[in-house]
Length: 159
Length: 173
Image: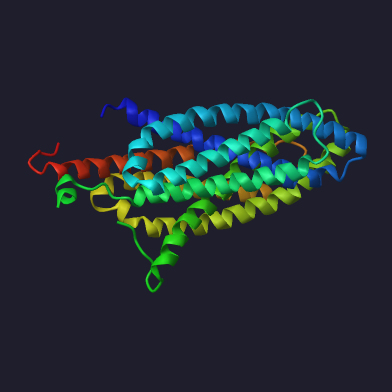
């Protein structure tokens, strides 16, 4: 294996993890911490601040989705033989992770459409946050199963 | 290759380690994403407000974010310790070359947690962005990079080992 591939693997893995951190932490901040800050403002100031934060958040989350899709596709291509070797467990866990991530992307993009937030955007943000935590849980179990799966030496597998 | 906890049934062992990993990642997301928002997004969002209003907003955010930082730091140390115990064999023996990366991850991780907690518990006006938290954000990204390098290196050693098990006549470099 040349040195380029390990460097790319590390780079894409780092991008995937840090981007996920920014996206999940951002949604947590917007749903849990931010409403507490808005309580100290009058209605007009709170609305203005919400719109400004939402605009910055939109730019952050769109970039995160792009980076997650690119790095996730690369990681999936690299790990695909391992999922094949793991059998149904590998593919079911990977499928769950991917499906949850796509649902999260869909909700996030839909929530950020238009200049004004939906009336029930806080509830949707909470749903997004829970789904994000579930996506991470699927990834954690998948990584654990992948790491603990021992590649069978040829001689052993022939016996 | 994994270090199991004594006296615990197998299904608990299988449940503990993904749970620990999940908690470790979730707390990292809260710390990294929270720091980014606290230091880079909120100040931009409030720059048009009056100064006393800005202080009120930052004060409330800081009060809540402090609890998040302390909670995340405690959980990260606990889950990190459990993971080190769990994967101890994966940093020793033929994997010994990866050990320095583990130490770097531990040292920089502890430094970033210390900086985050100290920056949040200090009693000072929150008006100015905290430079230390901005530096800490970069340190956190480096910590994540280091653990990605350690993991890849470990997997490369494991794959090389498996390849030589397949072809015992081949000489190792």
